[in-house]
Amino acid sequence: MNGIHDMGGMHGFGPVVREENEPVFHYDWEGRVFAMQVATPVPIPGGSRNNIEHMDPAEYLTTSYYEKWLHSRIKGLIDAGVLTAAELEARIALYRDHPETPVPHREDQDRVQRIRAQLRRVESPRRDVPLQPRFAIGATVRACNLHPPGHTRLPRYVRGKCGVVERYYGIYDFQDAVPPGTEAPPQPLYAVRFDARELWGASAEAHSVVCIDMWESYLEPA
Image 1 (cartoon, helix red, strand yellow):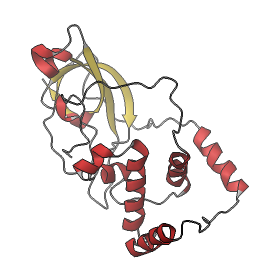
Image 2 (cartoon, one colour; image 1 turned 90 degrees about the horizontal axis):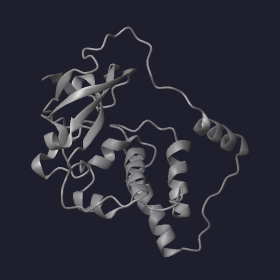
Image 3 (cartoon, helix red, strand yellow; image 1 turned 90 degrees about the vertical axis):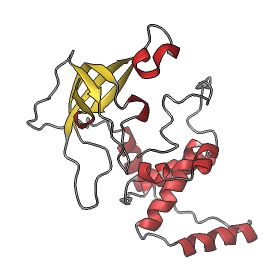
């Protein structure tokens, strides 16, 4: 979908600042939000990213990375029927009015070990299905000018622009949002190289290119 989250290639937001020796979590609560995400395997209607992309633009711009995760998880658990908005408000009110109330705590070392093993397990998402890629390496392609209502990995700034297929990865599950009750079929996945001047015109930095991973349905012959 088109929204404030699709900020790639937009001007006016300043440079991307890389933090030296950045920690995994800046605060303890961020680690707990991450744990909520991996330890509560509840299917989220519409998907977690879709929930983040539907945030109010002002809230999106003023919240941190894990605050967005927390927003998405809370909304997803409510949408899935795991908890209700009234239950959440009641618990918030309890700790607001009685901050000394102890937080529920449970020890389950077996579950901790299972989750740690799951996080360390490396599995390739590549699918072994008999699909032939439509585009060859070196082919000139154009990114389709699509405006889907749900989650998409097609950046807004590249739509309608021409590039060259740099690499073919194989077949992978399509990760855009699809109508409820349907499954997204796997598709060929490519790395497509775009000249910076194709994307941003004369103001682009000279001799620069951008490579973007793109599913086949994002592309058409140029």
